[in-house]
Length: 491
Image (tube, rainbow, N blue to C red; front, side, top):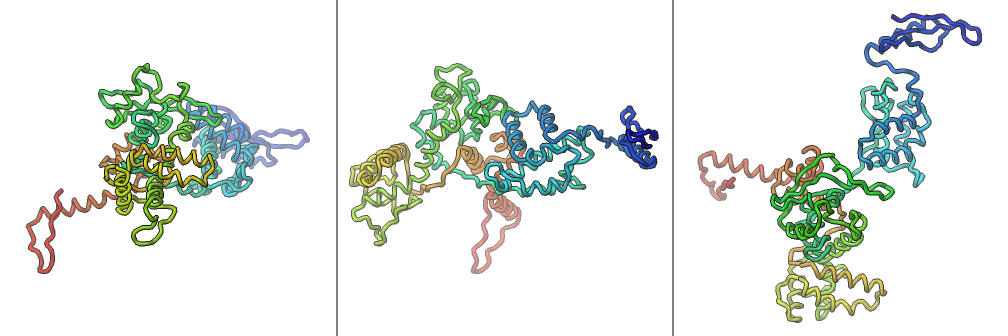
């Protein structure tokens, strides 16, 4: 039961201290001039202890920076990249405002104002919405942990109802880019000749949806040719200082994905002569293949060439025509066409006929070789470096095949190959659950929220099936005069 004690302070004045018990220990309030106030405070704190809401005032004197270090020490089991990102975010955005502030002095108003005005240390201007949102989430988590540790009675970053009202609006994510099967084949062919590691890696990534850290960590023992399965058990993580760490996958879960038959032979060839623990896609020195190296040397040049293949074909064919003028008399633009239409196919067939190539209208390696020769006179005004780049570009395109109907596409990243895998799987009829297992998402909810737009076409099919089923269940209806009879769509 709470009570008070009367004492004399250093100045000789009479003061009162409230005494109360929490967790079996006798504790004291601060010194007060009024005995009534000291007793009321002691009773309030004792009741808070009974409800599990008591906070030791001394525990909340620790600064936010000190608490961050203590909090991170208890998260040593998290991925190194996660801990590194938290340290960077705290150091650059949170610490300048709250690092030296004691936990008990952080107020809701301070957090709200900081969330809207936090400054980027790089630009000196207000940080982007994405950065501010991440920093705010870190501070909320940090203060939530302080509440759980009984260092704060409540999280000042949250409102009275528990909501984080100051969280910046989520930025719009970059739209996903998807390749069709034909475009994927074009990129893979541009990346390397059949059987080469670069071509195999592009195809394997785009047909399985593996993350870069996962595909670069695959070893010979992870491949089961008999069952046509790949075991995804680990992944490489790159830290800001360039260090590569081998650890668990992003979700800390193991999974199996199907080994596509179209790359099975190429994968088997890469396994030949290697030990079970050897990497399937090692770097030039045998060390793990780095993303930036593969992107610079193989993937980016392949995407740049394959994505503009139709336009490049159009430019060279049109320039090599007899008069350089289309049939309608309007001169073609320098940009060329981005779609392999009938007009371009006709010009390709005429070019093939003039050079003794089978007139298929499809631009394969033999036709590209002729186009490379026809392109040489157009390089007179280019520098030596530009001429070399043009030669490499056409050499890359010589490995590809373009057929009527092909389209150019915008540039994309290695991670877009993962999105392509999801797109192709959904287009092939895969369920949400199957796509979730393929990509290694933690739940189908994440899969559906990420690729919801790709499932919208299912609504048309559902409507047709339901309409057909209803029509098939009833008696046949005579066609109305002047109208075509409705025919049930077979399910």
